[in-house]
Structures are given as structure tokens and as C-alpha cells.
Length: 239
Image (cartoon, rainbow, N blue to C red):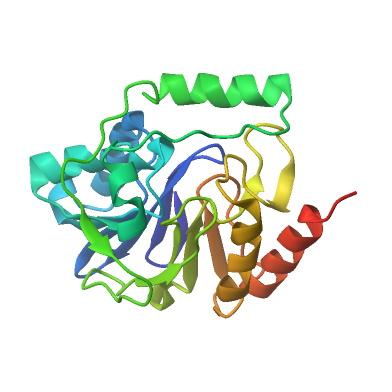
């Protein structure tokens, strides 16, 4: 699905994957679930591209619902997969992640689990090789993505700022659709390792100027970075 010039999304508001498409090739941000492979190849074909036109995959963090087809692209097409050094072991499946579920509603949670299982979320293939990145790096990939450290959801969570498409990809640094409650609108993401650190990281995100804020879960936001940060902070306040 085309969002804007050079900017595409596959998946949906439950789990999303983004493509930056330029004359130099394609940068994929996050790799969703294994079953998104078919959507990836279909979107590329519609653009007159193939998986071999992908120059790199940038993971916003190392959780399983963002790893999806990344190892397949790496193994079958030699495409590098970039992840923050603090989440490299997580992306390779070398650490056990204990997620706190927090509040949930039966219908929304069941819908999330059903979608994830239908898209291959129960058969995650971890990375065997990763290219590690750090805060401030600018990658030699289409769109020249800049890495912005956003720890909290996980130690190596990042945002990916691509000025060429006027977008910042935030992974689970925030969400616009809570997958466990179904609540819509900007808010803290579930399954966060350190909630206070994640909220503090919003200060760094607030320094970015971009039209699009693109989360791993939820609708794309085009109301600007500062407003989405304000709304997430408001949603995080105790009632």
C-alpha cells in the first residue's frame, strides 16, 4: 500500500512493515511475521521490483513480530539485516524475553494472537547474522536512514529517521493501536521492558521533524512528531 512518494506499507494496523523505495533500491524497515513474505513480494512486483532490489533490512528492535522474513532475505538474497548492538542477541534468539502483558481485553488479544498465528508468528526464524548499528549512525542504504536510540521497549530499540520520505519509523517506541486492548490513538506500546525509560526516550524522538510517524502496530500517523509525543505522554498519565 502506497502511503506517500517513495513510501509503502505492507501488513496492517496489527503488524506493519515499511518500504522506502528509491531509484537506488529498497530499504525495508522491520520484517513483520514470516507470512508477510508473500505481501512483500507482491508489493515489490507491483513496483517492478524483486527481493534482490532490497538493499537492507533495518529492525527497530529484536522482538519476534518484527523479525519475520528478515533471515529469509539475508539467507536467500544476501541482504544485510541491521539491528542495534543492544538487541543483537535478542534478534539471534540468544536471550529469553519475559514480556509483561499488562492490561488486555479478550477480543482484541484473541484477534492479535489469531492474526499472528495465521501469519506464521508461531514459527519465528531468528537471525544467524546481523549487522550492528548504534545511535547516530547513517546507513548506506536507500533513503540514508539515520539511527536514533530509543531504549525502553527493549534495550536496543531504535527509531529510524528517513528525511527523504519525511518519516520516522518508531517500531514499538509507541503505538497507535494497542494490540491487547484494541484501543486506538497514540499511547505507550505493550510488552515494554522498561516503561519509564521508554517514556524518557520520547524526549529524543521529539527532536525529530517529520510528517510521518510510523509505528510497528497501529495506523500511520501524519500529524507530526511533537503532537504524537504529546498524546503518548498524556495517555501514559495515571487516571
